Image 1 (cartoon, rainbow, N blue to C red):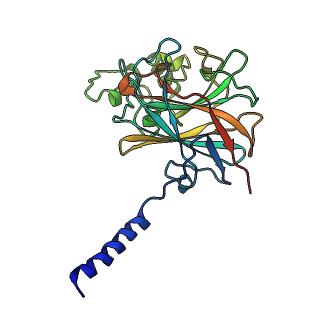
Image 2 (spheres, rainbow, N blue to C red):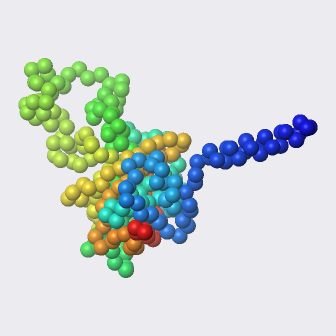
Image 3 (tube, helix red, strand yellow):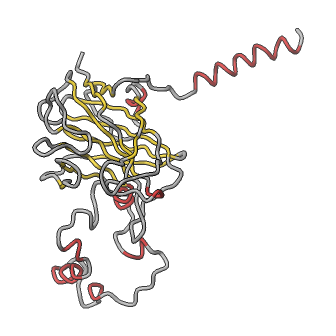
Length: 288
């Protein structure tokens, strides 16, 4: 046997082995987001369910319709997958981002994403720009800043500014027992946003918020927070899981619309300064 007769079969075997070990790519869905039906929803962005959930690549547009506008494009697209169990729906959003922006502070902006659904399912959906008066939309919002706190970063100034030097805080006085009513009351005096009930301030148990809106500038916190989720940064981008109840009037086998938004902190994006999609058809699978 000649050497080349041995090399060729070996090369073919090696290539086949690599192909068998390669990560399975999910099927593509060009025209809509397809939520596959599963009895158990995924709990992480790495769940094997995502290998069989169709992948929709959604083009992102500048939010240049209302002030403050975003006039220079940043993130080009977001990859969307979805799974439903007939009661709740899970989304996996992934996008490229060269930097991790998860630290709050003056002049700092955090990475974030959101999914928006009509609050009620009708043939005529409200405007994709956060709904219309009398026609609300439900928004599930994830923040990298929230995620860092959930992951264990302390909610104090030294965690945000590692080189800070604090001489003394009255609520840390030795005479105040940690966790006592007197100590907590003193701590509130030095955290005015938290003491006033600002939902953006203070420690967090989940990195997501449930919001409602009836047009630009009307966003408010939902009465109950029912969503959950988590985000992970790797290989130059974010992957975020958002799990929330299905809106009223929609169930397994039904159809509605969804819209998505991405904020890039390093691009100074916050609030209405964002990249966003139009309404995208969303179909829900049902049990076979």
